[in-house]
Length: 331
Image 1 (spheres, rainbow, N blue to C red):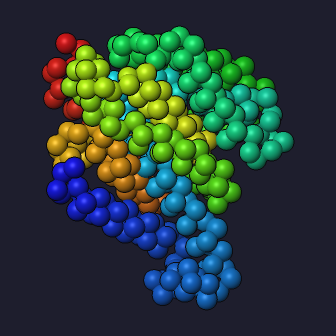
Image 2 (image 1 turned 135 degrees about the horizontal axis):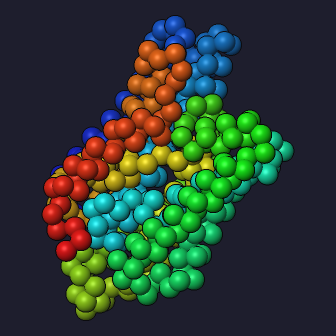
């Protein structure tokens, strides 16, 4: 463990707490600091408590938790695939999870139950994991795994496009587009409660994969000689990333690039150790996403910009910069 790691974790934890406080304080409704704190303590007016507890706090927590889950997924997949450009979308899990949400909307299940979309999103993330194992994910090399993931993602993207092309009415099409653009607006504690068990299970699995990833960073043959169980490490990492990503898509729709960028912000501080990278990356991604969502709420646009769009606008140039710096990719 790096001696500076506790300081790093403490710094990111404080930054996350500060980001959450800022997100609860900020908003279009003119509510002062004292009123907000009184509402958090349960001593404010009914209207202010409603805004703070039912609108701002669950939205801020949703942004932080989704960012943290995607950051942890990106860190563990970059360690597993030994590819700095890997993220939750590289194995096709994000696309399959989005396909599940689109299917729930297309067939009108979302109108019958509020939980239909998140249930289908998580179910299809698990289906993607099952398909990866059906093709032998535990035996594949990193390049094969990436290629299968790209194929799975393309197939899911084609089915999403087909569903949008054959949308039964403009309202369904609008719901699909809004979901795919990604947002944490109007999220509730019920949404967080649904996703929490999947996030907790996924976090436990990726942390268990950490020691194996540390050995894998030296190469598969060296890791094998060190006693690393490669099949177990791959299973823990892939299933953990699938649970984290599926629950995140269930809460916020498709939000890309944060899983790539956050580990790169942290990696120099943990001496490029893939096991030590997971938790700081999760905290950093949570901070990034909660601050980005707060900025979107305060931006002077007539219509609020979607969080997934903003993440892509910031993350895509960062992706190009990272790819240009790592000349060893693909060699």
